Image (tube, rainbow, N blue to C red; front, side):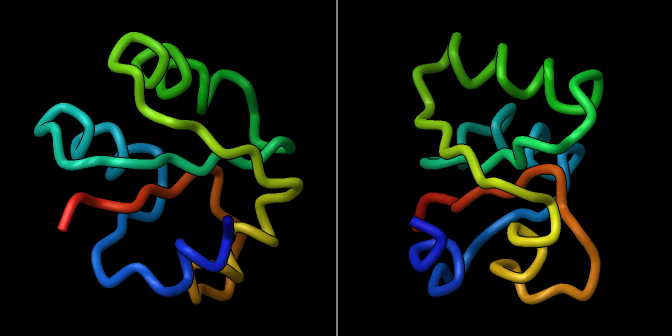
Length: 82
């Protein structure tokens, strides 16, 4: 599944950016790191459940950051609708 994120031309990185994109109905899939602080991703999980957006669990923030092509960890990321 991380391959989809790596290859996606349009994506968000980080919880704030992902939440903004969800509010605009631009997101088709969300990735959340399992080792992210719960208070950071709890609202994101709730909104995804409400809106029926698929959530993919990623083992670590580092792994998710690598998939996004950044040098630091990421709590969450999303693939945007084309």
